[in-house]
Each structure stands twice: as C-alpha cells, then as structure tokens.
Amino acid sequence: MTPHTTIASTLGQIAAARPASIAVFERFGLDYCCGGRAPLSQACNEAGLETSSVLDAIHRAEQAPRDDAAKDWTTSSMTALTEHIEATHHAFVRDALQRLAVIVPRVVRAHGERDARLVQLASVVSTLAVEMRDHMEKEEVVLFPMLRANESAASTGSAGPERLSQPIACMIAEHESAGAALASIRTLTDGFAIPRGACPTYRSMLTLLHDLERDMHVHVHKENNILFPAALHQRACNT
Image (cartoon, rainbow, N blue to C red; front, side, top):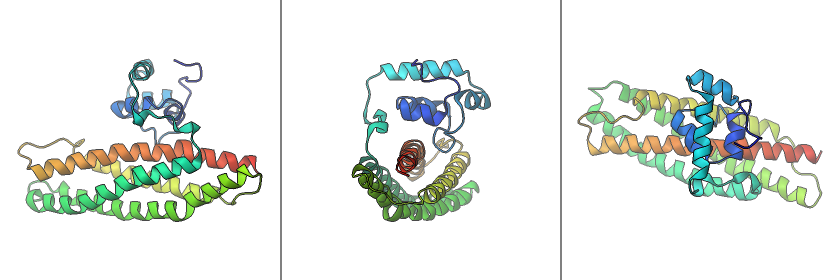
C-alpha cells in the first residue's frame, strides 16, 4: 500500500486517489460516495469488516488491468470532469429512469398482489426520478457552468464566480437524499435478488435498478470527492 493511504484515510479520499478501490468498496458494501467522509477504520468497524482485508483487496485490485472505470479523475480539469459527468452519468440516469417509468408499473400490476413492497418500491423510484431530473438540471444549467467559468477565470488570473459553497452544499444534500432512496430500493428488493418465478420484465427491472445504483455511486463519488473539493479549493486560492 502507498504511504498516503492509512486506516485514518476517508473512503472518499481513497476512492479519489486510488480508483481501483471503488470496485472493492462496492463489493464490501462500503459507502464511498455519500458516506465518503468516514475514515476507513470506522467504516470497516461499523460494517464488521477487517480493515486489513479491505486494504489487501484494494492492493490486489490495483494489480489487475485497469479499465475506464478506474480512470484517475483527480488530474482532470473541472471542465473535462463536468462534461464527462453530463455525457456519461447524467445521460445514463435519464435513460434508466425513463425505462423504469415503463417497467416498474408493469411489474407492480403483475406481481403487486403477491408482494406489497412493490407498490412502495414504485413510489420510491418515482420520487427519485423527479428529484434526480431536477438535480441534474440544476447542475447542468447553474452549478457546472459556474465551475467552468471559475476555472476559466483562474487561468487568466481574474476572479471567478463567488458563493460556490451554498450551491455545492445543496447538491451534496440532494446526493444524500438520493443515496437514502437507493438504500431503500436495495432493501425493498432484498439486494436485487431475483425471486423464484420472476418474469423477464421483473428480472429486467432488478437488473436496471442494480445498474442504476452502481452508476450513481460512482457518479456521486466523482462530484462529492473530486469535483466539489477541487472547486472549493480553487475558489479559496483565488480569494
């Protein structure tokens, strides 16, 4: 392990500095996005995990061939990162939610009488969809353009837009709300387990919900642990 990673390092710091750790955190169920401020030792203790086992798993993951998911975004510009988030994660979320708006009601109609939790699941997914569409629009129309302008201004030595702390805090709070919804979805689906006799539509719903959870974990991580700290640091350096 590198000397920069200790049991006192937060999950967010580790995920940002060592992208290969993301897959490890997902496998162990450690919340590196909304819960990224927790030290590794605390997170492992609360999850009943041996810290050394997690560190060893991260080391092994770093020895494996890397794919695009393990790209180090800490060296990218805010402009490049915001454009990537919009083109990749925002596009995926919108597509997934649009598909779920069709699939989930079908599953409720076909299986709701046998599992009352499906009605609650539909409500959680519907609320998440409304909140995420509004959230992403605020990022694309307001916050991300501010960050790009700030970065451009910094490159010329001029002052960038002020009052970044408040909109960033608002986005982080909304991330936590989305994280709570994803946790509810995981609980209501028994960890996306496919029940016996599930029809193809039911299976497709569970697969898509699981894909949405994984993508949003990485999505929120890139914002909470890389983009937003970089924006606040740059603003502090220019004041």
